Image 1: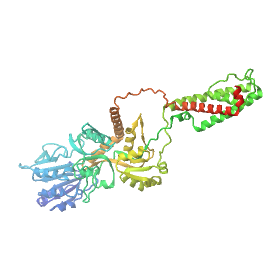
Image 2: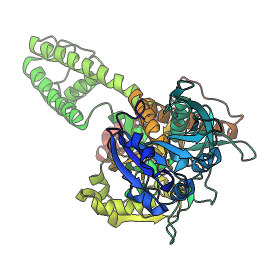
Image 3: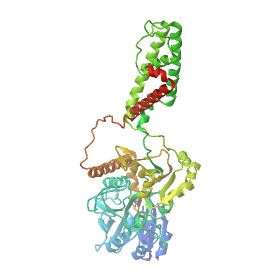
Image 4: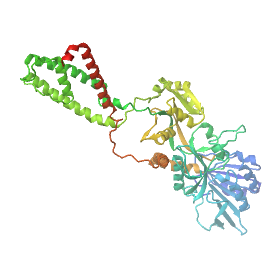
Length: 580
């Protein structure tokens, strides 16, 4: 005690077998003793102070160790799981019984002292925690010293020596995803939660055995008697060491299990349909914005009369025309310049030459800019303006669908009025498949956690490299995701330390993105198996009728306008037409 617990506050508990003052004299002479309690029955152990901001040591001088063993199976909170314990016992079997109790299994530092048959000899044993069952020999006290110099309170968590820890989980995309064989068996588990668990195993040297909740539940629910089912129930009954499945931190769950340091952060986001692209024939207008088109039209309307006035006032070069210039011909000339068609008879007057020269420069830059952008818009589909913000969603006629009522509760309790108004349009669906079906039909948006929304948008319903769904820009209701642990487990401190390393290194986000890429690859492989035998498209894209439909539409409009003009001429000028 003087060497290993010199800086700790000490609590000494003794029974009638050690009530002789000469026995307690050595312990009571220590300066760091804070509490001495005489125990006769199990309830007396509740008098001990089990909490301390720093190091605390406990010395149990007991002839009747069964009283302490009974206490170790009741009232989980009445025990210092991080304390250092030295327990006097009559036999090693009594110490082994301590390690099998509810509290003994989760106590990291426990030393047992047993009197040997040799005079003045005491044998010391230490618990193994996850290293093995029961107690193992540590050293022996003979006369005035120990026969060896062991570490009395070693770190038993940094290296778990390959022990297998049971982790309860279930498929919940994208946190936990399964790759199955043809017979339905699981060949691979992956996802951010699986990656975090395996990284913990590498850091702390333990193996992982993944199991699903035995009762078929998911996270579980609380029964009338206070017990839990599902993942929560397995941890509450100490049937599993850890639990992962996109587990949200909540006050209700904190009272049942311990949570690790949060390793992920998510919000509630909206999955919406990617609107169909605009018709290809509209691509001819996409290179310029509407304001630019209006400016070009104004320039065309102004340049025609200006050229006509200058030509009429100054005259045109010889041979240009036998008749006087007309406004229509001047407009036709400037229209031809916009199409990079030069005039057959260039102007000879200085004023018209200056005007036409700058018109050439103006239309050259204009047409080059147009042609450069037009190629891109002919090849790439342009998407229409879509709903991106929560306010825009509230102003639309789309429903908000979700699985269960938990998201409606988040909408109702939101402080943002734009979010709160969505609760009136919220509808509950029976499954995620029903929700996705409504999204693809354009009737609703699907409210789910951010990870699932990103997963669907990047891996599902993809054709030609384009996803039919998307995640809206705005989300709400942030929440933390952590690993569930047994109540009062000694693993928590080390698990938190490793998770902090993972966060700082960026491995959490890397694991998520890697899982999405793997899921997308699996989806592509499935699609390839279904479409086996189809000819793969060339990497180079040739312009087809779909790309060029706008050009042919212009030709059709030209044919129709020419026909109407011809009919008008026949009706208005029948004699002139007959002379021709």
